[in-house]
Image (cartoon, rainbow, N blue to C red; front, top):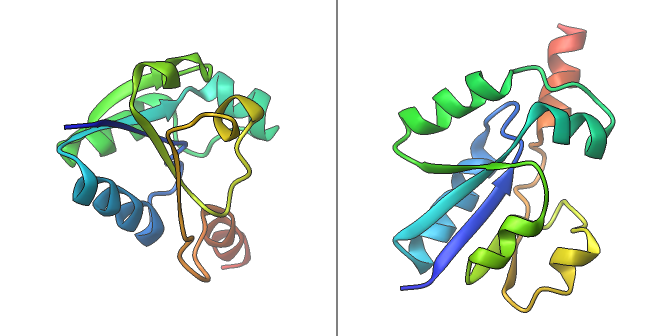
Length: 121
């Protein structure tokens, strides 16, 4: 059974994340969420996450998911596949990775859209 890494910030968990995780579970029982650390998000996305790493970790663990701390892309080499939504351009280290799987993004729902709605509420 292949091992699949699903990297994510999961700052605001939404339907697209669940669809992505369910798609990964269709391919394998060995799913691990690579949860980006707060520092990694700050450096990579140039913004501070709304939820702390601990809060995001607790939410995903409550869903029964296995989690690995993701503060670099090197951890991907320990998995057979890396799976992510199509709304994201992977860094070279992943786009060149033979086991990269891209899943179509859920239309009209992203963490950024949700944050904007909250801001304007």
